[in-house]
Image 1 (cartoon, rainbow, N blue to C red):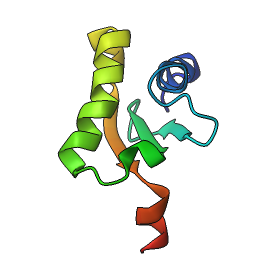
Image 2: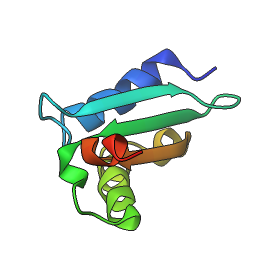
Image 3: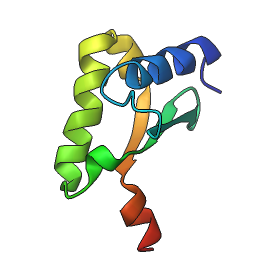
Image 4: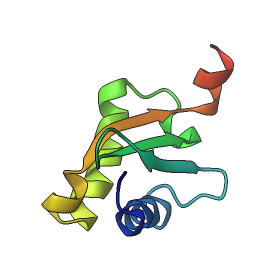
Length: 87
């Protein structure tokens, strides 16, 4: 189980940064062992390729967290509401 304080810090970095719109959903949860999973649903991902979505997420994490903190994120998923509706 990941540290609750670190999960909150990761969420705060994302929600107080690029994904600060009220409609942006940022979910931070436990991954295997003590790793962290991040799922973001945002219209900011509309029309973007997977690599662009990952760049947006990781840019926030690497610029605002120490390597030993962002290094605990083992999964990050960015999707738009439209992509969810299409599945």
